[in-house]
Amino acid sequence: MFILKKRGWELPERLATPETHYLNRRQILAGLAGSGVLLGTGLGIRPSFAEEDPSAGLYPVERNASFTLDRDLTAEEVTTKYNNFYEFGSHKQIYPAAQKLKIRPWTVTLDGMIDNPQVVDIDALLGKMPLEERLYRFRCVEAWSMAVPWSGFALSELVKLASPQAGANYLRFETFLDPAVAGGQKQAWYPWPYVEGLTLEEATNELAFMATGIYGKPLAKQYGAPIRLVVPWKYGFKSIKSVVRITFTDKRPVSFWEEIQASEYGFWANVNPSVPHRRWPQSSERLLGTDERRNTLLFNGYEEQVAGIYKNITGERLFM
Ligand SMILES: Nc1nc2c(c(=O)[nH]1)N[C@H]1C(S)=C(S)[C@@H](COP(=O)(O)O)O[C@H]1N2
Ligand SMILES: [Mo]
Image (cartoon, rainbow, N blue to C red):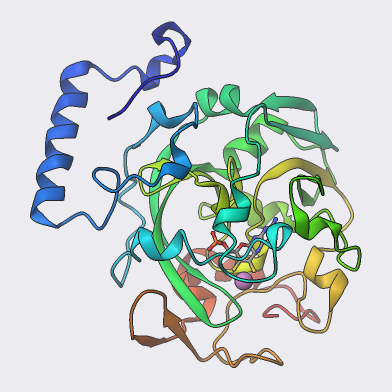
C-alpha cells in the first residue's frame, strides 16, 4: 500500500519509521477502516490521481491533535470533485482537466527581502519539513464549506528557512503559469498568474499551513498539488494553489481577485458572518456533501488563534 519510490537512504531520519511501528499503524488504520471510523482517509479508496506521485511514501503523517473540528470530515469523494481552480476552468468539476498539471519536477523559489534566497526542489523540501496532519474547516466566500485532513507543514517553518530581513512585512505567493497546460490561463482578461498575499504576522501564525497532502496521501492535482497555502480563518480564495514562488516584500501584494474586483475581494478577507459579500450572504454555509447548513463563525471559528493579529489595525476592510 505505501510504496516507497524513494530509496531508504534518501529519507531523512525523522521519516525512517521503524517497520514495527509502521506495521502497527497500518494495522490500526486497517481496523479503523473496517469499523467505519475512518471517513475515506488513506486505505481502501485510493483515487488514481495520486498514483504516480513520488512523495506517496511519505504519507500518512502523524496527526497534530491540537487542531480539532466541530463537525465530521467531508467525504473525500465529494471534495475531490468540487474545486475552484480557475487555471483549469471557472466551474467546479475541474478535476479531469487538472490532471494535465505536471507536478515533477517542481521547485519553489524563495526570494525578495530574505537572507537565504533559494530555489528549492519540492522533494527536498518535503524531506526537510516537519510533516503533520491537521483537521481544518475551510470556508469559500461562495458560502460552501468543507472540513478536511490536510498534511503538510507550518508556513512559519518556510519563513524560518527563508530568514526574512527587517522590513519584509509581507509574503507574496505566486502560482505556476503555463497556458499550454492550464487552459484557463489562455483567458487573457484574468491577471495570471494567480497571486495571493499575507502579512508576515499572519504567515507566522500557528494556523498558516502549507499543504502537500490530504486524506493521508499527496495532494491530488485539483487541490493545488504539489504544494498550496491553507489559511483556514480566511475565505478560500486566499489559500493559493500550486505555489511556485514566495517573495518577501515591504509592499502589500495585490492578489488575483483583488485585481479583478477590489470592492468584493480585499487583501484581508477574514471570514465574518455579519459582513455580507455583494453576491453571497455570509451568515451561514452549506456543508459540502450533506444537506446541512451551519451558522458561519467569526474567523471561521479560529478567533482565539488569530483575533490578536487584527486588534490594532484600523481603517481597513478586514473582512472582505
Ligand atoms: N491558483 C489558484 N488557487 C486557488 C484558486 C484558483 O482558482 N487558483 N481558487 C481559490 C478558491 S476560490 C478556493 S475556495 C480554494 C478551493 O480549494 P479546493 O478546491 O481545494 O477546495 O482554492 C483557492 N485557491
Ligand atoms: Mo472560494
